[in-house]
Image (tube, rainbow, N blue to C red; front, side, top):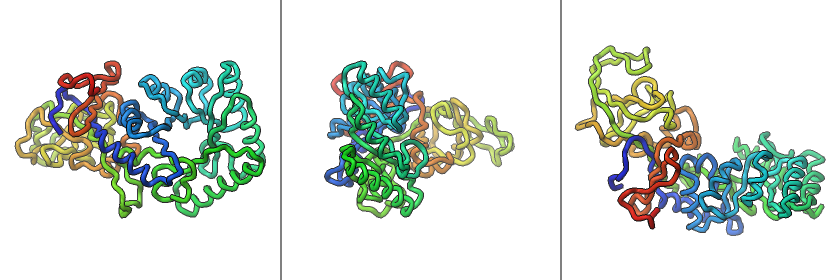
Length: 397
């Protein structure tokens, strides 16, 4: 990638072409009759929700999903006009804003549905909702096998000013037998609802893992998040599709100095250096989303070499052992994630999963977007959101 024309401290590079390719992969994997719902929660897994939505919309995406109303309103403020489903529980204080923005809401019971219907009636405009079903995940929704659930769904479908567009559940993905039991519960409920003539027109059950693992349950839509962002579903390594990495987490070296054998680095008092060590100070820390506990376990990539992280990671800075990195110099770029540091290793060092590693990247690092191998935009959340590369025309932003 070309040199970046912006002040370099700590930043995140997003490959929009790889993102688009992963979306096309999801569409190819999905059943022909299933819509691909692109999941943009947690700032599009750290990638920047508005920029991601714009690129995916250009690829034909017409249905997005987020966790909460504020995430959806951010998309609307960014010019995203496509359907946006809020997956989280109803947020009544934000209900008016949600209706004005034309969002699609999740309802988990009759009481929530009545609140939405009443608010929609006051506006005189209908609102689309999806009913969440709990098939055994034990998180949100009407219990799939409860005897009063069909009647509750029928009552929700009969409320004025509600268009019940969909019904959905989430698999636990613990094991295939358990997933099959949960899918069977949802299908049995839908069969009952069809007999009562109140089955919503759209049914969706699977996420990125289910997209690959369970093609028989694609139904009317698939919710694809992690796969878009380069997280290949577990146990799909031999499957014939590509899942391209979409993100690099970058910083620079601000200081180099020698520390003597026996010295302790930073806040760590338990691991004295075993040799004279060339220490690189990096202006990145857990305030940027790099976990504090990575110290002593993780490595960063500098000049093609892996350099161990020393001591505890600080809020705004961290240190690495660059004694064995030939030609290392202040100002060198450093890959915290990418360029030899895999997402799987990064997540293991952080003691989280790959989704969590991406979703916890903070707002502080600038997001630098690439297309066609060139930087096309820089977004800085601390300075008011969208920005641009100074050497690029406004047309590319």
